[in-house]
Amino acid sequence: MGVEEIVLLNAEDEAVGTAPKSTSHHRDTPYHLAFSCYVVDTEGRVLITQRALDKRTFPGVWTGSCCGHPGPGEKLRDAVRRRLRDELGMPGAASITSVLPRFQYRAVAEDGTVEHERCPVVRATVADGAVRPNRDEVEAAEWWTWERCLELAERPESSPWYRLQLAELAPLGAPLDWPDAGRDALPPALAW
Image 1: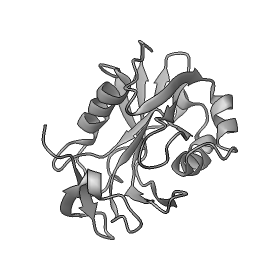
Image 2 (image 1 turned 180 degrees about the vertical axis):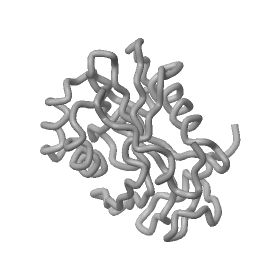
Image 3 (image 1 turned 135 degrees about the horizontal axis):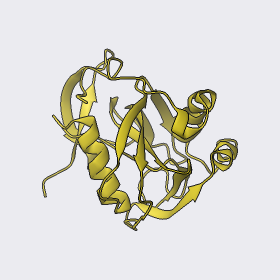
Image 4 (image 1 turned 30 degrees about the horizontal axis):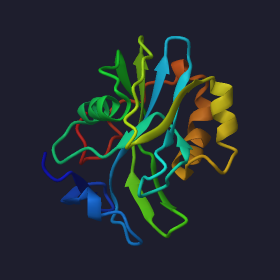
């Protein structure tokens, strides 16, 4: 397996290069492409995860189902499926829907490490909720009600991006009701 690369972006969200993921997150992290995914089962429960305790950035925080970085030329749906498989042991999603295609954020960890991402948010709907977390990535994975997810957004043990995303997701209603935001607002650097 080669070096995992992230896609660097300019202010217009156009790709302007790549960099190794392993050395890109620091006190002056460049603006880059990422995504967040909320896995929802047919009962409307959301898979919430706790990041592994030895993760370099934001260890041990509770957050959405999974997140990641699309590689150069990788489509968003393919990147989501890759991370669901590699991070959570979930072989596939029944459907993937763009929910917050314009989402972006900048957050600083306690150690000064910065996350600075254009991070479209998607919902992956699954019929089979079996999860086999990769312990290098995920400390815990639990199916939560939407009400419990909303409560987590009020607590400091949640990730900064989770709190910001929930502020935008809450007005959309229950997760199974989130409307498809389409593909037009995705960054130019990212194919569907």
